[in-house]
Image 1 (cartoon, rainbow, N blue to C red):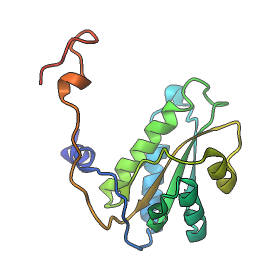
Image 2: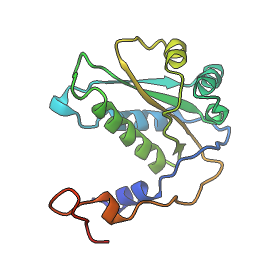
Image 3: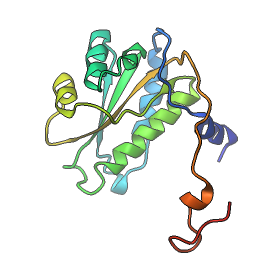
Image 4: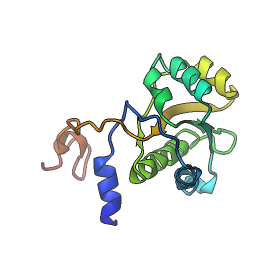
Length: 172
């Protein structure tokens, strides 16, 4: 794995303050393309993503995300949607993988993101026209960070990994 990929993974943080700067189309296209190129079971690609650029709609979506108004400061909000008709088994996992790929691509281009799972499902669906027969998985703002927090603590390796059998701690 190229070191720049590892650096991107290790240095990504959840960003909750953004500068009011637009995102060039070229950068957004690279982020979206990274998601489109993500792996999926049987190459079914059971995903769809709503790209919210409109400033007023971003405010409404942020309000529907438990009043996390800071989200609207970002240039874009992305919503990840799983399509069960394309892959009933993988319609949550595969879009989540693609979403994480877009989050890492955004970080590598100098943008910040923050995984959002706290939202009013009905309100977000209504605002973005998302049908009931698909999964609304999560959202993220994408924009130029105004602050970059320190890394938060992580569980020790022996609590996260097992060696050979579940429950046999992996050495720290």
